[in-house]
Image 1: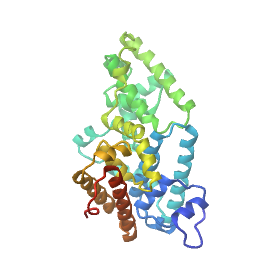
Image 2: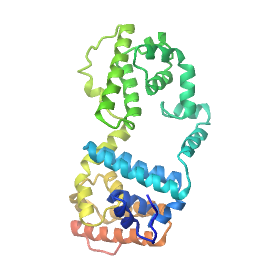
Image 3: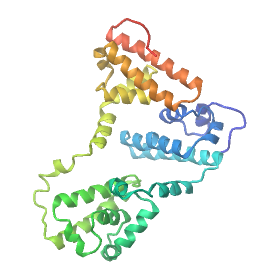
Image 4: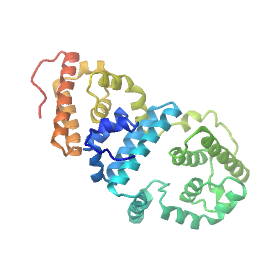
Length: 327
């Protein structure tokens, strides 16, 4: 993407480049990006946060695969332009992650089992060399499966018997699926992963003699999600009405939306039960969070205007008449 010759707004630039998206625009504006020139000072940390909120979390809301791919392309184009403007190369990501892996033994134990840095993969390949050969021989080797197994002290063909129950196998399957989910672009890739795990399951059952007893009955239990995952999915599903209402009334703000959801307000009708004290707490939290992110005074003023507009909508719903937002 060529840099615009004349100063233009971020919104105009995104439309010109065919990458406009309301949510992406909102996140970038929150991060202080008002024109394409601002990308020169954009950091890797800011981009990681942008991608997490704008692509990873948004993907949970999108059911259509085509929409997910379009969103990914837009984020990729923005990343390409940013790297060209800032001079920050993608190789720097791996270096940063490698440094973060130099931690104490306790930190490593507390880290996710698939911290997919180059060093973590190297360690898994060394420790699980025997298992790797066995998996390759049986056409079910994947790096993620190897790393999950090694993290569970399953490092060789003989160690497979350490997976001593259906629940233990289900946990390995879950971890592999979570690790691969970010990389699975289409149903074909997902199918390949499932086929490989099916082969591994047959090998495991052959070695342990454990049958699929009560697996169907335990499906509900197995599908219990981590509280954070369940919370994110609930937010995407239950907050659709609230999100639509906020956009319709020009009070859409991610931090405000998240805080309302956290307070159990999943639709605009829930504002009727919000008293002045609770409302002030919500606005205070949102304002503090936003101002920590926004350095530009104009951006802060826009944030305040949005909160004032939200106050008017709240008063309409609740019928409470009083002073304006406390700052």
